[in-house]
Length: 213
Image (cartoon, rainbow, N blue to C red):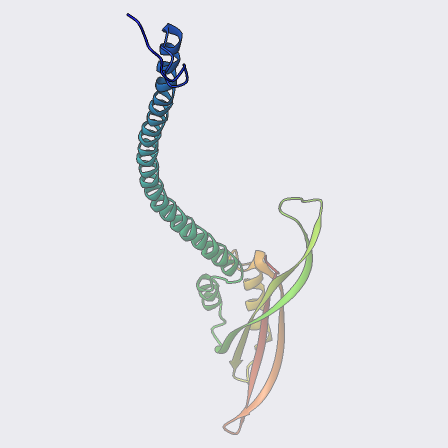
């Protein structure tokens, strides 16, 4: 076959050989491969993101459950601290109060038959003293301790001598198993008062207790 080139080689395309075909195929496949890789990465990212969102939602539910448990625990701890504070306050209050029932029973049992109890009360003072620390006995600290005084007034007929009866009453209180170990001193103050035109003898008795922590 004869080829007539009227354009003198300037308009007729060159025939492609095996190398050209391969280059053309490569040129077409490369962008397609890149597109496929990008699409795979995109889909993989979407799947991974969905999985992470599910895990985050799962953890959030656990956190919400734990937050309720933490609130309950904090409430219990608050109640526990409140109870401890109340117990400490009660302990401190108990240390400053005394059970007077057995003391009054002892006084009533030892009262002189010839006299009458006309007054009874308690006076509370305080005394500062150095005592060893509980945690470190070698160290001394100043503490305020209550000092209680049981104040009584006894009266009797002035025509009778009540000095011996009052003295015996004082001795019985001092040797009592209820009062004796707790008493620091017992002081007696006699006095006379006019009542209904006649003299009445009174004995003011102060039972001073030892300071107690």
